[in-house]
Image (cartoon, rainbow, N blue to C red; front, side, top):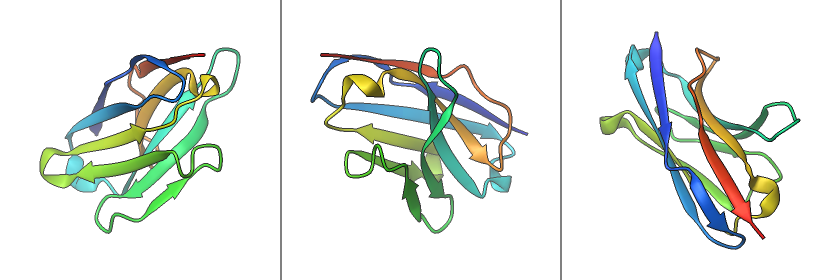
Length: 114
C-alpha cells in the first residue's frame, strides 16, 4: 500500500501562485500514475491533473490547463502541483492519489480570495 501526505495549501489572492506537494511512502515501486484531485464545498471530488510516474506524460482538466503544472521527483517520491493564475473557483481541498486509486489522504485546503 502507498501512503500519501499532501501539503502546501493556504490562502492566496486571485492571480497568485501556490505549489502543492504530495509525498508518497510505502510500496512506491507499484505506482503507475499519480493524480491531483479537488473537492469544493457542496461539490463532488473532481480530477485536476495526472502524471505517469515513469515517463512523465501529463494530462489536465480543461479548467486548469495552461494554469496548473503537475510534476514529479521520483528520487523523493513526491509529486507537485504548481498552481498559477489561480481563481476563486479553484478554492477546494486538494488531494493526491495513485491511479488506480488507493487510500485517500487528508488533503490540503486551498482558498483563493477575490
